[in-house]
Image (cartoon, rainbow, N blue to C red; front, side):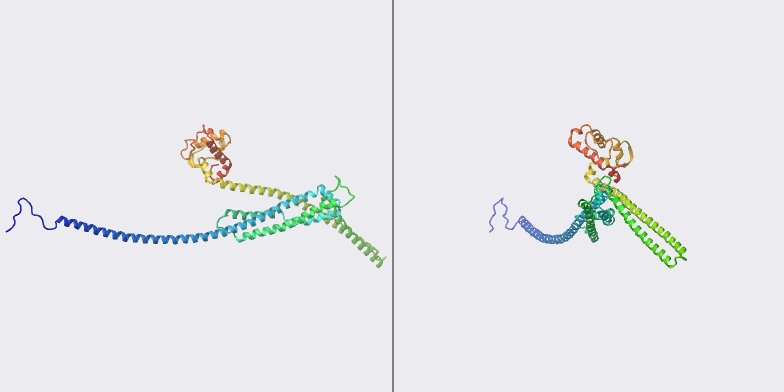
Length: 445
């Protein structure tokens, strides 16, 4: 018989509820998704790690290759710098020798020219044997000293090489082998010239020293002949001696001819002998006169040659001074061009060199920098307060909408040292570099 259930109470379920099943299913699904996500994450992490290691290895290989290239470039740069410094040292040695020879030769020629007419030369002229030595010194030793044009040509060639090397100094530029040969040849040539210079200088100073040692009863007075006059007189004496010797030879020949013909036929041949003798006399007189004329022409030619040499030396000295000044001006222009191209200078002068429509006293339709002559004409380049104020006004005015403007009050800038120095610096640069800036097109004429 079935037991009776209490009335009003539901029956207690005996199986697993659907919510429990759903909960278990969701938990299992979450665990599965988590395991799947972990697996994917772990796989991606290994892949990323492998990619990082590969990239690191590639970077290391590239770094080693760059280090090797850098080491090779450094070795090449060191070699080039060593070659440059070695050549510059050779250039310095050659330049010193050439300048020493140039100065020494100029001093020697000046001393030789002075000795011709000064008191020391008059003292030498008192001794005939010293006059002969002086003549040989002037005609042989001095001409062997290298002339100034050759010296200047060699010096300029060496300095040209120096400037080319200095322009590339510190880079990988390797000087050509021909440069070293040229510099070495110049050094050798200068050393040989210095040797000849020393010999000529010793000969010249020896003349003066010997004139102080040798004894003579002649007295040095204001009327004593100069050395050049004594040399000319000695040349004339030598020419006269040669002429006398020629006349004596002709006279002996004339006498022998007369005697021979007289002895051969004292009577019948007298007329012919006299005619022959007369012919010989005429021929002798002609020869003597021709000899005198030739000697006089040779002496005149020597005098003209000495005068020509003196004039050439003076002309060369003036030409060399002009060439040196020209080279100095060219070198200064090069430095000024370099300075005019410096960024700091261009920035300081930007209100004046920047192209614009507004000019100093007019308005144009084309973009152009300011005019240097216009700036100067308005007094903006006068180094006083008024000139500085004028220059500042040009760089400050708001009428110009194109060029950079200075934010400095023209009426108050003198109270601020920094502003005052800025305007002074710009004016100084314009005064110094104005012509160069015009040449470079940074300013209008």
